[in-house]
Length: 141
Image (cartoon, rainbow, N blue to C red; front, side, top):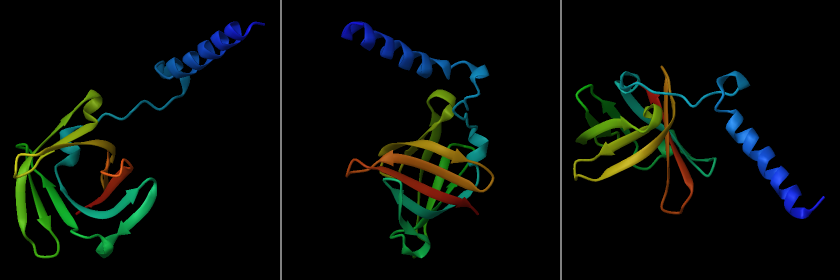
């Protein structure tokens, strides 16, 4: 078999594996879709993970805070150290509402990938300044 033909077979095999997950009957778990109502609570930052490793937990988190998402698209962030608050806006975007856009009180918008939202946990991630995946893990209050 020629090298080109072998590479073509490998490409077709890999393409078939990747595209097969689009078919719901394959047993794959489809990416979750989120509703804004799932966020309408107060969430306390409990852990920061960087590159898949826990970097800080609980009171060891510098500038630990709570986020309260409101149904009018506003949010409030409360610093746990001194109870100071700031406000901004939020919305879900992207396919399946899997992106969380937060615009802070200064007008800066950041977009986060939602990893998990359920009755007790909110997890979102982003690429930090060191180009590493950073996850913020919150518990519902």
